Image 1: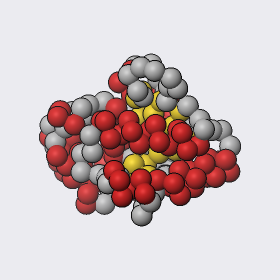
Image 2 (image 1 turned 90 degrees about the vertical axis):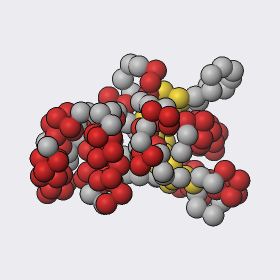
Image 3 (image 1 turned 60 degrees about the horizontal axis):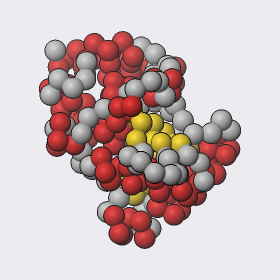
Image 4 (image 1 turned 30 degrees about the vertical axis):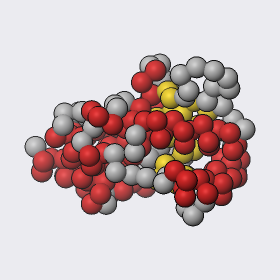
Length: 187
């Protein structure tokens, strides 16, 4: 995926739900820190866009996410036209403590919208190390390859990832321990 494709997906999601902001929580959020040209190919292979509406009520989040997925998800005209599909994740499902604050922190590198004009839409992207924590807690082969490629390219800090794995939600501690062992084996 390229950054322009991500920006288009963000605009589409915001227009569908009528909100100016969303959070990008999947692998494509790495484009909030780097351009596709800076990234290894393993980090830009996804055509699925994991976007969460930025609202406080979990029921409203689910409703809006279903709306996005219904309009731009798998087998939708959006997917047919752009080769991309929206999916939605669970807020904070595998992310380390304070991930949302880091995503919404200062720094335009994580905020994407059109360069000018109205209306302005914002897609807040996960911090790059928080994204790696989420990927390692899922621990699928494609997630391990994604993180390994970023570490090998020296685009993420393995020590920061290891530190944040210790703040993963309690139900993901076995996955975090497995991920820590995987990181240690790579050193």
